[in-house]
Image (cartoon, rainbow, N blue to C red; front, side):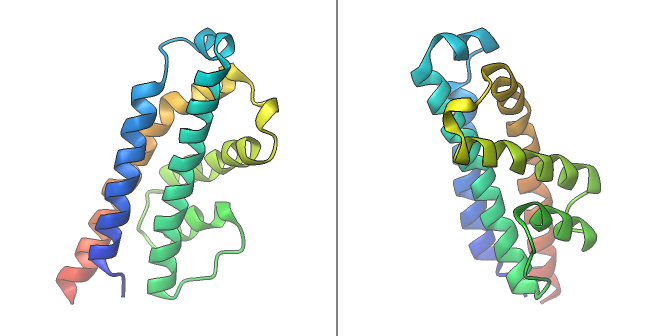
Length: 144
């Protein structure tokens, strides 16, 4: 059974990271291309946000006995299959794993415009993720 207090703590950390990403993201993509330090900061926070979401997903999957997930993408797909996430959100986050992997494995090759596009939509996706997972965990706790 999913431990709601652990989920709440992990989501609190994820929301904090999401706020940091939102706070450092310049309004225009060309600002990332013009400042390598800002590019790296945004890339790190995108990576960290997705990694934190994967950590939350992994926790729920393990507690519910639905895994293990065969890949990072499958974490979100498993949550959708079990009604925790809406399928469209799960697909968007699964697609985000590609961005996470690009940042983690080919940091110097990150396209600033593509990174900006991903960083612009990620806070809303992570916000929806937090709400849906927390709703699930609280429902599990209420059913006892």
